[in-house]
View 1 (cartoon, rainbow, N blue to C red):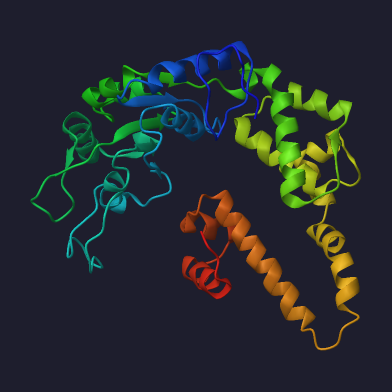
View 2 (cartoon, rainbow, N blue to C red):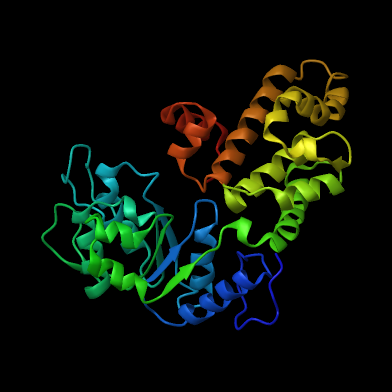
Length: 339
């Protein structure tokens, strides 16, 4: 992705796009906070890709050679969040048959990104505050304290000050983050960035899904700029990728971008286009087990793509695929899919 050359920092991969004044302010903010080894708060609406900003901070800090570990509190059942963060000893709860390391310990010498921190209850907030202050934690079912050298970066899409006022968030924890606070603007407030980002996602989709070369028509570009994008950059990315795959021809028009028109396109048509050349050669052979081979390849590819898109989160991938998590695990084992 492009990066403004007149900013104070050089963002390491993964990069963030934008040359609007509001994004220049974000880039400069990243440069300022990256060198300070303190807790950081990133706020912004859903879909603004706060994790990319957290990674930019990490890769521009002295911890860049250490691990970057991300935890999304909205994707973890509330009753196991503490165990995920701090780890646990054998017998800590039903099913805890052996000791397990938590995310904090995994992130030692690096950065731990806590996404949607307002989803955490007050009891766990207090433990996170203790860790930020003392760099010390206790695994579940353990009386021993352990040290870990970890920088905490938290993110939220809600009003944290309001949460503090309502007693849903500890004020001291808020203050720990608020000294270094980066606010991400919604996409509708930086319209000059929309087309460059859309063109990047289109180029990426063409490469990833191996479609024919495509470009955006004038009416498509006009629509992209006028639309308010309530889902922000994530919605833009999904819209462009869908249009790249399902549109017919080399030019993507406005109708290809509209969600209500998606029913006019067929996954069947897409698969037929991709498989036609392959099947033409395969049907010349005998006993090639074409039915089983094609179904297996499609299923394996689908699961692999969804796992990559969900960052290896099996629970989220299973929900996206509409299958049971145990079924997904069996498929991963069957196809020897590496996450």
